[in-house]
Length: 331
Image (tube, rainbow, N blue to C red; front, side):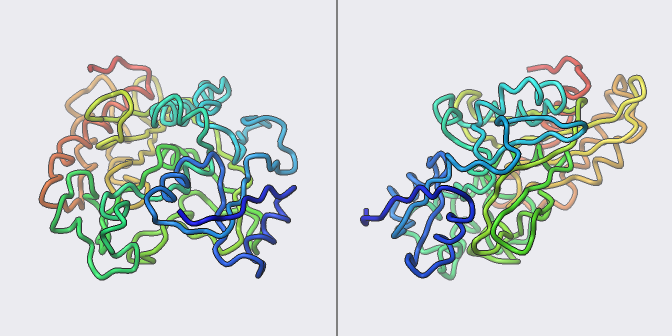
């Protein structure tokens, strides 16, 4: 591991100056530092300065999670544990709290931050292994395409087949979330515009400009919302497929729906076909519900070892919908 400096700037302006100035050539932001430590150990990042952002507070920040009228605010430095346990989110946007509460282990959730979860790098084993010079690291081949791809994407046209690693991002995508920024020309960015697919840029996953820093996230209440993940083991494990669903109900009839899938695409994968199919479905009509959720796999192109996700994703979507409506979900 190469030596590096550690900086603790006093505010976002000083952080921006470190990121864009000439003093350091490879600056790196650190919140909780979980993914940073992994990259340093794996020899993938060799920064000359690591900038600690945990103590930075945006103007108006009063608590990790707060609510003002119909706007919920999550600070960039809010830990995953704080998000998962938030009374505000559990009441007004349960899909967010439950999605984050399902991520990683208690120890990681106690340290990992909201911004860090949104901007963590993919977990593809070819990317994470320094011996493979894959596309994402500037090489000429996505080794997953013809190699070990059990956990890779079934959506997207490549040329890289990562799955997006964040549990938080898909939940935010169904709550009209906005990411607020410091240090660039933009003050904010809708969460749905934060990420790009690999064909739009292979070396990064997000659309932040150099020097832009996430300060906080705002979202709209979605009290009738749910999350469901399918894992190989339900304790600490990465999901094989998961879904977040936000509903508006008229009795037991779905008036409108918004569904986003995770662990199946390089970005949080919105499912407008499912949204349209769920409209007008009675939650007690299981046949109609299953038919609507089956549209979750439209357009999917599985790789050689992950076609099982075609069966799994509609199940996750249906269970997320039932969870949102407060219905019993079978194990």
